[in-house]
Length: 328
Image 1 (tube, helix red, strand yellow):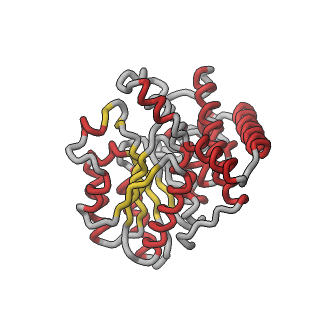
Image 2 (spheres, rainbow, N blue to C red):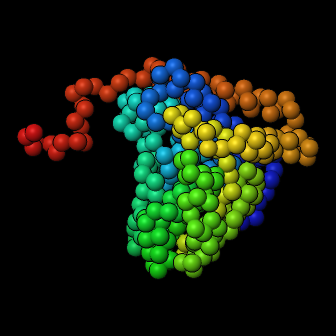
Image 3 (cartoon, rainbow, N blue to C red):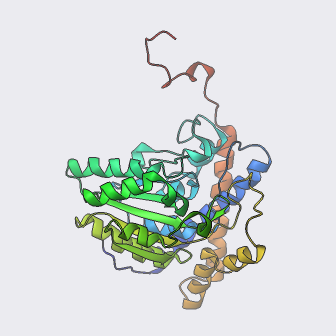
């Protein structure tokens, strides 16, 4: 795949539609959580859509993706059907993880989408292992690992960076730096707040990107993914981004100034891209409105699918838990 980006109407529509689908899916998920249709923890991706959508354009179906607990957007951008993702959120058997994973453990081996990891930094060593397996078997494939800046304070981050650099593993590390590790500001948790310097200390090429600009994200991701495919070892991208909602639905969000949130909302990746497309004459307002209706319909169809989907039969509850033939 080339790092050069061709922004024709079809591609721009693809980018916009993917971001709008994620936004509406997340908004609807929040509503359903309030209705107690979705339970447990729920971490919304609203505001960060450009990161998942832009990076996925640089990946092939054969590449692997590892995400965090805020992974609904990554799953949708990867191409998982909204129906299966929503059913998983409901805990239904028709979900991507048969309803056993819920919001934080969306998984699809066929699409090489390996979660959904609830442990902060837990996906980093997993991505190193996937990349090592691909390299040992001679497959020219990329493992893309998404994680937050809070994970840089975890030991797994440094272990994974070190091994990836030492063994020249084909990993694209994507740090989604939204400024807060749960409720802790970056400056309060890290002595080094420049994420790129963390990677560069392991001699991994690193670049900081405007994570609120889907085009900038795609350009950087294509360049980095190409470098990985060419055998240059791991690459690191820091996405300067922001979540518009609280850390989770349980979070009162008292640690951020409301003015700060509103300032970031002015840089909304969807509105910015829509405005640019209209200004450039690539899309008209009526076409954008049509995309909005289509994504709304897709999300509502996913809700109907989840509502009608069956629960896992009680007889199957120990399936894949107990070894067959072994007495309890």
